Image 1: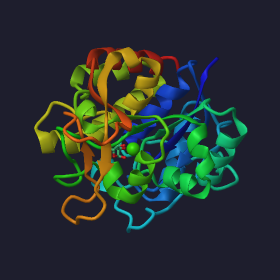
Image 2 (image 1 turned 30 degrees about the horizontal axis):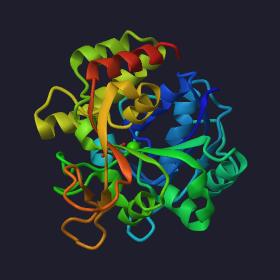
Image 3 (image 1 turned 45 degrees about the vertical axis):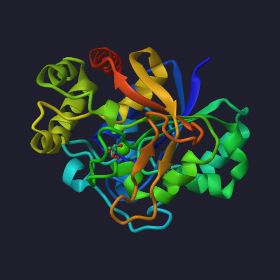
Image 4 (image 1 turned 180 degrees about the vertical axis):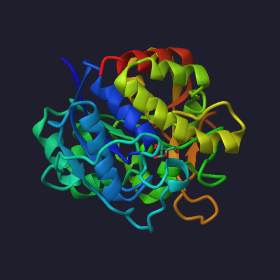
Length: 310
Ligand code: RIB
Ligand code: CA
């Protein structure tokens, strides 16, 4: 029986690769994509999600547009990383498939209420606005979520959009606070693990050898990595979001620990900081499996092999 998932996303090249990995993996049944404002505005994330579906030959997949701004803040976007379109690096046609009827938040609520409790996993890859809004409108869904497996936050790596915060959490810290408090099981793929999954020349070359879709992915990573290479002086860039899907497929590639994670929402200096009690120095109850390491070669082998199937 395939694991049922909803991918909540702000494509973004790395989101796009995560979606492709999920669509190439028979272990997963993607019930739908829900677009959220993040890397680029909602109109573009909703467009880009459909571009990825069409690239994968999955125009049957419902793509719902969601929240176009954070719950209580102005939107902050990341065109400086992802380019004007959010999917710079590959020249793909505008989508022809329409958006699915209905707001993403309603799709999340209705799907969780329709499917048997404990059978749907939520995979947020961007700001948590859609997820938190769904929990606010329908608190009953918290007990029906199998697990929330999200990319966001940091501990040792601290921050990327500010010295204190990772982008997805920073954009909507109120949403993140609500998600971490909702009581559903949570797995976090933070910068600490994504920064151990760096693209390299050899890994990008392997993408190019993986066929039509692999060539597109190589174009995306070639564009996406320029910002982080300049910033960190590294050979490549962290491929953040596909690690969420890889954890679902091969949790044995990862290590982490159950810790308490709280989100800073009051301080202008540390807004969006994910305060992970990695060393257990407080008596705050653990609320998340916080992933700290990954077998990077194993991850890229898995990703490249799956992309070759599309
Ligand atoms: O900080 C990295 C995260 O922010 C990734 O999900 C990337 O796509 C952006 O949304
Ligand atoms: Ca993302």
